[in-house]
Length: 301
Image 1: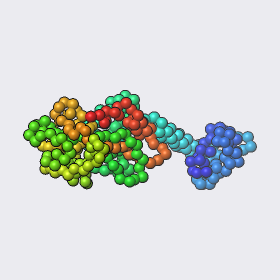
Image 2: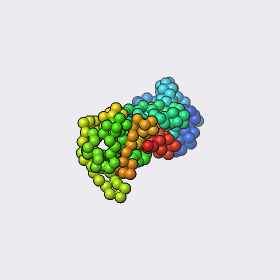
Image 3: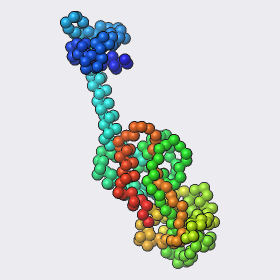
Image 4: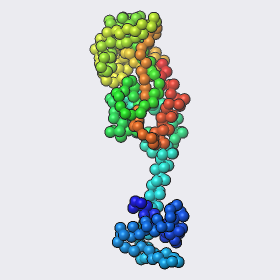
């Protein structure tokens, strides 16, 4: 038995007043309990108990040791209880990483509902338009829009977003409205700095035939929010997930086009470390996003 186990055997002997009583509570033989106490005394180099055929009593050193020992064991019990409670009751700080646009536009919209369900959980939302290492950077989980590199992390699919082409009415008044993907070649197409994206936009036509249209433009950025701002200011066309522009399209500050053409769907996933024992706060957040009624709003156009 380990050191804590030997201390537990000693404390139970003191509390029950006998090796038999301690053995009964610990579900061990009295011989084994006696052996653990003797090994503890040998380790400490002191005598902790006076033993007679009728009773067991503490030595002076044993009484001092029991006072500290019982306090330590009580603290360990409290620690185990607290750890178990964290595993079963959502509470504490939940660190979440998400892309700037998605994290700004969609996640805060559903946090009030989550807070009502789990008032003891504090969300720390860190927004970054880059790949994050969940474990190395201390996140509980991350929201990833688009493809993810091969990894040992666990993933849950939140949904699939559709991308649409849109622009400000002022831009379209000057440059015209493209009717087919091929018309994009003559427009100023603002693009995201993802490898391959700046070279062409992919579409599937009404005849289900795919096509890749070469595009060009005077603005490339790694920020979806920057693209949205540029488009709102009439700089050009953007191809962006519907969740980015839902409000702007509804208000009329952006206009969609090429409605008979579709684009490849964009997966939105939760990424989190593997392991059998997810904390209650992580499980609650995952279940809330995957099954919660707020999820459809993530992908509305």
